[in-house]
Length: 273
Image (cartoon, rainbow, N blue to C red; front, side):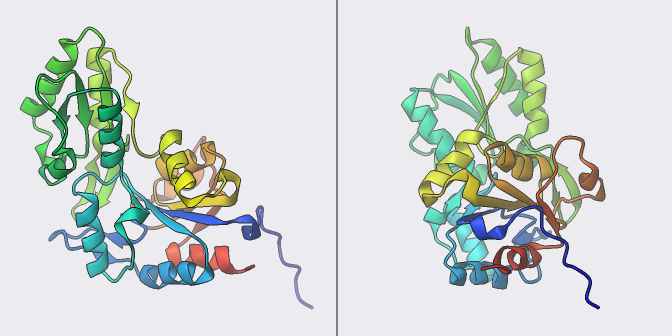
């Protein structure tokens, strides 16, 4: 006698749009920075596309431009366009223009082209990205001095991740440096990127999908899953990338589902379609 099927806590039938994290979900970083696609992820993206579900790629990647990232993913076998990728740098540049702000930037040199048409003379704000090894004392201290010199200091952080995973192990992310400057300068950073609601909402608007009909699949339980859920989306946690077993006991964020990888996540989404 067959056992009854345990009902899922939510139905994938309502999903009309899918947001995917990139690093740790589509591919893993390697020492040579070429990267390697996670097993089944290339095929999983293609299956989503064939299903007719709109897909957008949401990332806090700031070590390269959007165009460079698309070329990297294309070499790994993924098919996607620049307009489908949503990183923080273009969004923060738009904010800077709208508010007539001139930033002192602490970013990775590969991200510099994103700020090519931004006036950076006589800075009246600071922008942080994942500068990796370029987070030198001199650079961070200059950001501190800039903020302290302003009557109303403005600090932007492209994401607020604590850490991420590379081939050599876990690495400090921009959030650690953001918190240091917040503490030292008594300022609250404006987050551009995940988990900012305005960032997620911009992606949803581009897809033409309501939050209640969208799902985010990511490896960061706070910024991917928690951020999406706070906006009204479903959040699926993959056990790849920066995932750690302790994530399954997170005190505040409870994913709608856990899956071993993106391929399993797509199985879950498409099983009732």
